[in-house]
Image 1 (cartoon, rainbow, N blue to C red):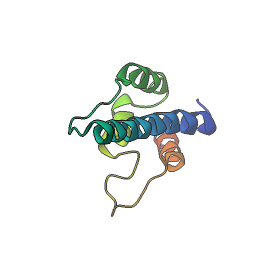
Image 2: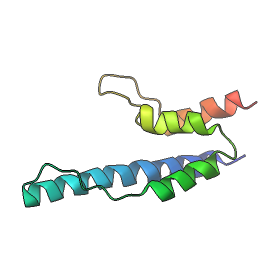
Image 3: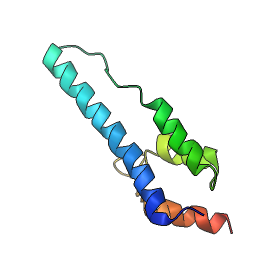
Length: 95
């Protein structure tokens, strides 16, 4: 089983990269006065990290947490499930 700190670090890295890409896109939009998104395509590395984590956990559940639930916070008004809490929930399900 992957250790909690390594799991949290991996998902935090994906989260931070996605946030950084959005911020960079916003800066490019502002600098060039355009309304198009300019996101880097990091899908290859993100998919690979998810595939590695899928050795221990269900891939669909990982994708749902990351993409559908926005890392456990689907809306500003919703409760947040931290990555650490997500790990705890997954490990309980796998017992």
